[in-house]
Length: 175
Image (tube, rainbow, N blue to C red; front, side, top):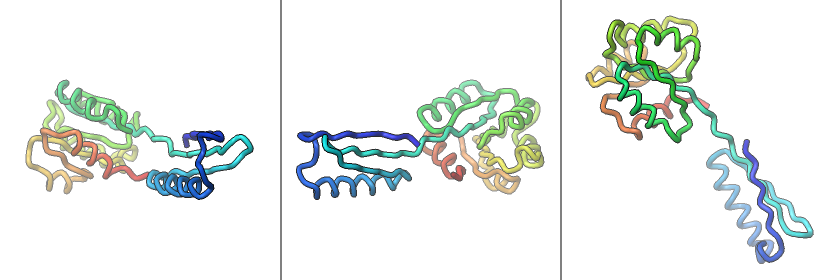
């Protein structure tokens, strides 16, 4: 958790005890939306309020795509979010990288040179290190039913938008 202390002194404090109670009640309700809490205490020189907010957990995401521009787009989509980006352009390195990094989510292009995304998906599903890792298949092809049948947790059709991408990742994260 992150702890924020607010100290209100005489003139800056609430005019009445009821205003203080109302403010604390509103703060409690707002903080409950993000699983936070509030504590308050009165002292001779004013009031101290402590806000406790949950720290944002960084969630590692491995993205496998042979196109450098597409990887850069995914990286920009994740910037400023709770997701950390690791990109992989070499399909033959996808399995070893996924097994060593242990990302929480893997995003996988279907059309890759050498070994395609379908083969990588199958390999990730049978590996003990990655069988429980949610995999998002991403392609220009209309193959959502096939992807889900073969074990993908989600399917995104290219071109992607940041909002759709983050929503798909958020749907797969269990806290």
